[in-house]
Amino acid sequence: MAKRSTRPIDSSAGLPETIAPQLATLARRPPATGDWRYEIKFDGYRLMCRLDSGRVKLITRGGHDWTVKMRALATAIEVPVDNAWLDGEVVVLTETGIPDFNALQNAFDRRSTAQLTFFAFDIPFLNGRDLREVPLSQRRELLGELIAQTSSERERFSESFTEDPESLLASACRMRLEGIIGKRADAPYRSGR
Image (cartoon, rainbow, N blue to C red):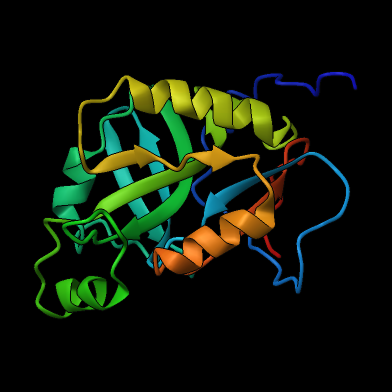
């Protein structure tokens, strides 16, 4: 398969102000064919993170700017880029490292969001390049390298797995996780479902 273009976006256009997230479709069973990667389905809030010249904006799935509500998290995000959009999930982790949705809701209810953690799982834009046509496997490789350069415990890379999805799902259930998400390794980034 030929590599997809990573040509720079029009510099006069700059980094897009908004990007709608790519959404999952519920499936009854894992796909039988294809090159798939699986990630933990976090029990949190979907979050798009816009980084531009050191400024961080945290945007909800519905397009609301929650940077002020998550000031400590915005300050903790230190990805070494000029500009980028990151796609991920914000969670509160238990002492055993499992996402706890009730604790996340309580954090917002109490306006005590200092312990939020952002798990990044995609990067549709990076340093002036529109990566949405680049295969997922390449985007995730770039993202993993960037997150590895940070020292913040509040931003993490969402690891992926290639093992049998049935056994991964069984493990997720034993750990009381919400489930798993399957993604095609060669897929572009498409806003919407």
